[in-house]
Image (cartoon, rainbow, N blue to C red; front, side, top):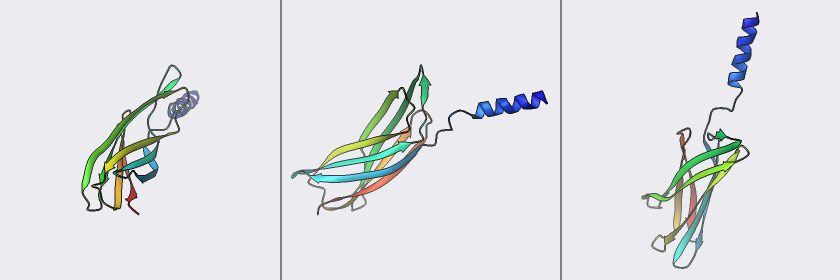
Length: 138
């Protein structure tokens, strides 16, 4: 009986840590500002469920991401923006905001465009993508 209780206790203890990473992307947003001769596009997405490493009471995350843009004519411009988030904090991360800011010239006409965020959690090797539409023009 003692051994059964000990095995159950060890089993609960082994499973009691942080849950396995499950990278998720939520609340994508994008909008464009007319700068006259060009457009400034700002976009963001929330990332959560990523893996974290803990060393000396510091939590760290590593997320890489790039953004593709699909034009109204269905042409895909690959990796028009890329970035890497390497962050440390004394507290565990709940979520982070990944942002992209780019300028496109006036050769891009009016219409509905799509941005696709492609995110990779460098610790867990999980990847996810999410898209969001935005409009150029009136």
